[in-house]
Image 1 (cartoon, rainbow, N blue to C red):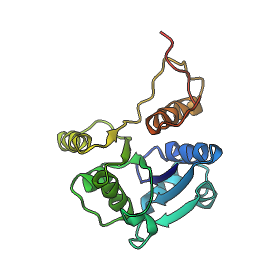
Image 2: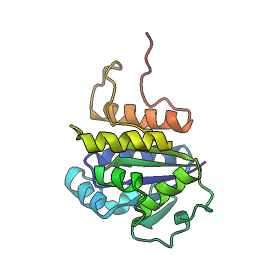
Image 3: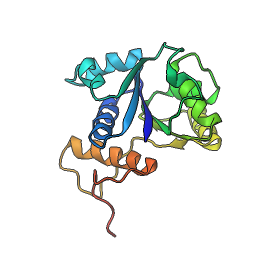
Image 4: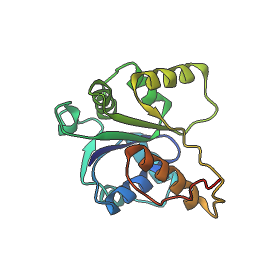
Length: 184
């Protein structure tokens, strides 16, 4: 499996970092795109260094590199996950504003009918944002708010991150035991 993982400047970059590490452990080929603001949020929210995060990816691209291999719909890729996604990125994807590598790759996923998972970490939501999310869903994207379940009785913040990482893996069809599943 070959995946694009895009991390934008939304709060909650730890979800993207954790997903990238998990995919590496599972031997999945990843193509990482970090937005400029993602790098700033990584510095503000975490103890991680950007270079350390990049080591978990198979390939790395600048969000401004419109000549990157992944910018073409002819590049063989299976799916894309935007985690976390900013509202700005959602808007760019919905309106096919392909001025960044992230929005260009997302547009490719939609036009090629490939899996696009958009993990929004924002609350509350404005009516225009809700409308954009509805449109993205109609266009074929999976909308995944970063809203963890608590039935597994998380013991710490990593349990909460792992719940969402497991749900993303579920959407990608990747077997995992990242979280305690509902048992009834």
